[in-house]
Image 1: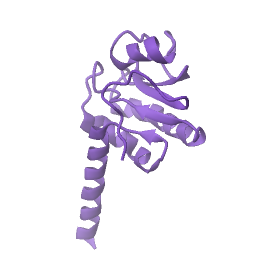
Image 2: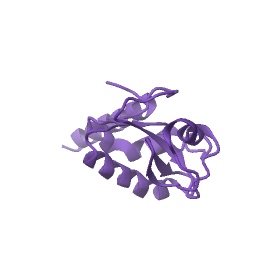
Image 3: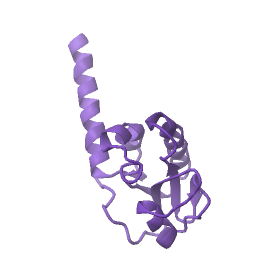
Image 4: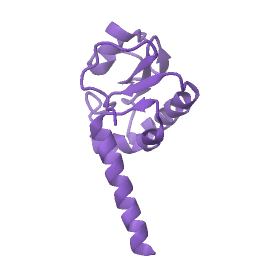
Length: 140
């Protein structure tokens, strides 16, 4: 299993850096700043593909407001299957969410060969799946 490194300074030719942003596209800090400096993110563009990066807004409300943007990303990643997407710990820095709040949004990504998640997200998703499976067996 591969995991997104804590620090990404370069990408392969088909790799895309996935970062948390705000809707205004003010990429001033955290992974968003790295996306601008190294991977072609565009100031003023808060959502979607830009350069060799992909912005998922995380600063507009609760986790439920992030989910549609994650779903949109997952759909695009399945279409762009020639690319590898390195998802950072979106929402877990400046936005103030915990890994436990954000990771479940990426559950479907675990089954995708071209999406690489942070290790913390992967472990939380797998733990949640095991718990759900155990709960289902308890009801059988």
